[in-house]
Length: 113
Image 1 (cartoon, rainbow, N blue to C red):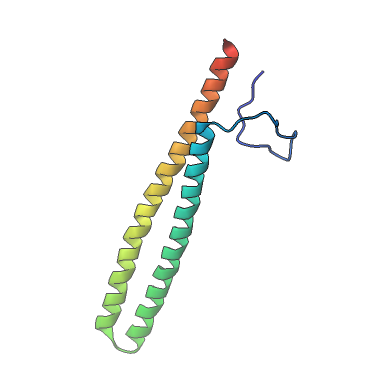
Image 2 (image 1 turned 30 degrees about the vertical axis):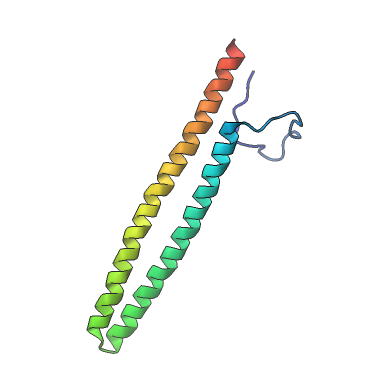
C-alpha cells in the first residue's frame, strides 16, 4: 500500500523525522511561493482597476469627458495585466500539479519494484 497525498489532512500522523526534502519538494515550494505572489499582484491590479473606474465616474459627473477616457484607458491596461497574471497563475498551477503527479507516479513505480 502506498500513499500519494498533498499533505496531512486533519492533522494525521506526526511527520516522519527521517523524511528528506528533495529537489521536487523545493520546486513545488518555489512554485507555490510564486503562485502566492501572483495572487497578491492580482489583488493589487484589481484595486487599481476599481479606483480607475471610480475616478472615471467622478470625472464624468464633473463633465471632464477627456480625462475620464484616459482613466478608462488606464483601466483597460490594468485589465490586460490581470489577464496575463491569470495565464501565469494557470501555468504555475499546472506545473505544480505535474510535479506532484510525477512524484506520485515515481512512488508507485518504486513500490512496485
